[in-house]
Length: 257
Image 1 (cartoon, rainbow, N blue to C red):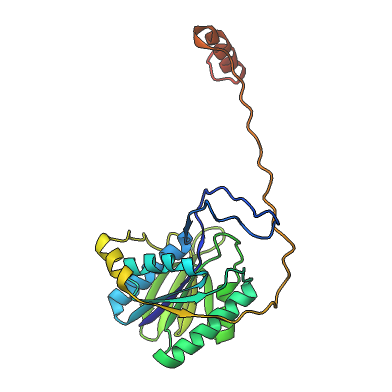
Image 2: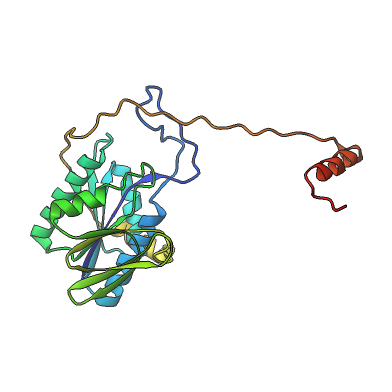
């Protein structure tokens, strides 16, 4: 079973987003980077599938040279090979991203054999596009289902489950090769061990220079949403604040009669 997991380098959740002066890019000087929780589960699932069924696993990302860090994190968990589609730092839209990934997959499969299963995070953690996995699957002519929270491998097929609107589960049987978009909750990702990090540090990362062309919408600029301020009312200081506190509790109905 040959499994590929595609990940994206994104700012760490909770980081304060600051734009460059021209409003075209995010200023990344003070940001930490990671992959989304969906993709963390995808990495873990790829490792588990190969551990159970044998075969090989690979991780792929499109991004600048520093995105190698996220690839090595995946290899520290147990992914065997890493492919970096190394960009010059410019932002790729979903159309350009999927085209670069499709080209890399076709070239890799021609040399090493077909990926039985390709995993994506359900959506990008930073832009929420929901597009790349679907575009890749359509271009490759392979079935895809998004929102997956359960995967069972069988001989020549994969059974995938996702939560249905209003409760319950939807179950899909897909012939291999196939593409799945997975969600957080699919599994509980393991933490990289120290020996795993040391092994990952010694592994080679395959580097590919993707071709880029502007085929989608043109970005005019970025805008950070206005943050709502919080108001604080100081009722008093020390023992003198006690009557005001009691009065407040009475007004909100927190004190019994």
